[in-house]
Length: 241
Image (cartoon, rainbow, N blue to C red; front, side, top):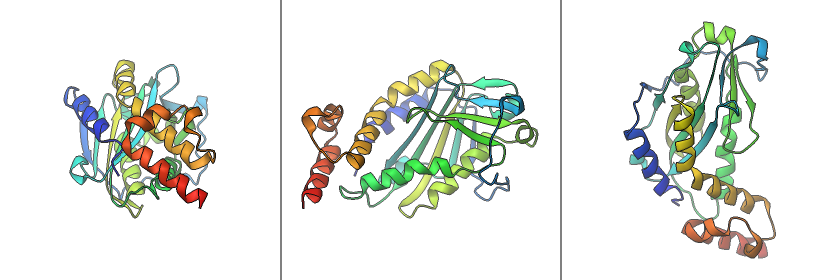
């Protein structure tokens, strides 16, 4: 089931016109230690901050069953890396592209929920996801010790790719980070605007039992994305039965 096809195309156009700083192959066997889910980074020990609300942030996960649209194991950075940014609060966008299979009207909502939770499984010593006040915003901190030991977007991206690949129906994973400026993150937000609406609609389908389209704030996006409307009808029928 393809929900993001038009967004993939727009995102690739965005990448084509930007100056890519670095491209890495993921190191899924990296030796960065886990934090034991105790990764609290206070302001006085912080070396680098990502996605402070004043600097803009964006986090999005897109999936497709067209595996050719995903460059498996690739990590792309547009903008400065963490090792060169001590004492800096960077604007931050993280876009994860997944090649998947077997998505259909019955399982997409559940699988969407599983994929959304993967970011909380990232457990790297010295890295903290500080806040997630809105679904597509992330606010992160890296502490001074991690910075001194070389924590980088390659390490973070490699861990994300490793975690997503552990999911049975994910066959490939690619991560793009953008730290080049507030303007680039805002441009990406505009491209990803439909993702916010689609994800919101999926979340409501998963939690709202009323299925009253006439009062739903996502009625327009369901009208425009055919897969959402058919999924909604299928879920409504299953719950009635």
